[in-house]
Length: 194
Image 1: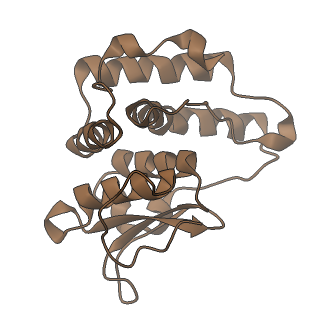
Image 2: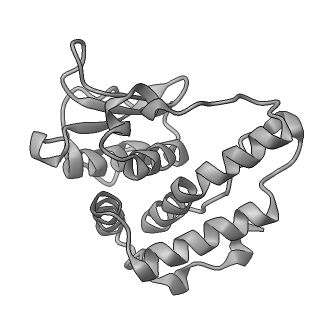
């Protein structure tokens, strides 16, 4: 299981994958000048905790030692603006499994950008990305429209640009994992999401 974020550490090739991802994030963002934010595994549920009385740094918590959870939560942090990053869990609502059709449509609408970034981050690590509808009780996976929207957003990020935090993290991951530039749009095909 991923260790809690207590100190910044250098990575080695033998570290678990999620720990390597967290170490890259921390190298990019843990210093006060780098936004004083750490990516921390070992949690039962993902959550974002802004710094405050009990915590000297902002903490992006991901589930257990799952690399996909680390990348997904890092993507949410990269999407969140400064005001949202001052709120627990960015101030977002979350409806668990068993969402109505309207709730599921809203979930897919707000998840396009973070899941597009997650795909870019996964590519930077050499991992496979899977779009997630996050609604297991429905028995349905992500809709075709949701997958197309994610793919189009990835293309836009690659061709039109993304914010500095997302770009810096994507390129740092690619450097860590010896992968090509993850911002090359030719690396992403809609058929991969089928």
